[in-house]
Length: 215
Image 1 (cartoon, helix red, strand yellow):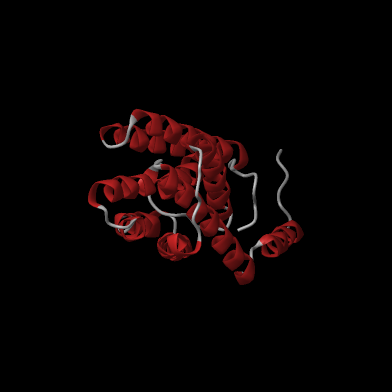
Image 2 (cartoon, rainbow, N blue to C red; image 1 turned 90 degrees about the horizontal axis):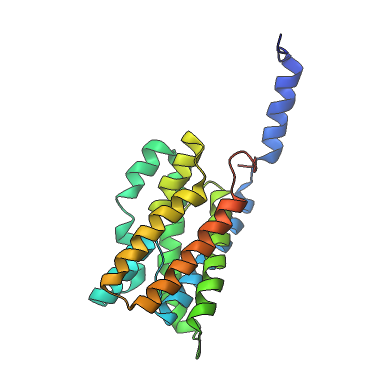
């Protein structure tokens, strides 16, 4: 016969959950750091002429075609996903995601004025950018946030059905990047695919269901 939880054990579990819960300052520094890492990765990709998946990849494609800044396009492309996040992931997740998307849009507009790389090998950009993206998204996911789009969907599928977020992210991002074959030279698409594999592989290994219990 399975053990029946005692009132004391329930109180202990509640106390442990309260202890593990992130405070406002912890959330703020993690969300800022994660978004900053992603902004740095996107700056590298933009300078090397590479792409990324998800709504960021769609914004990059539109940027290359229209010349409109990535930050403005990224903010607009993410708007439809807020409804999905609000109804499936809750108010806290949605509000944090909105703040991070707005901050990323602002940072990508600011970066050209404060940082410039004179030479950037596209292979190095894809490897470093992929790791920065994976690290930034991991920070955000562990503090119940995202950068919208495909990340919202992948985190929902992991939380609801136990599907690994990294695997779902890889499938979505790979599809978006392959669509770039109609806009970007094949060599750049190949480097972009490598960046997606590095990012998604990092998330696949590091963000497993049930491994991280703080929230």
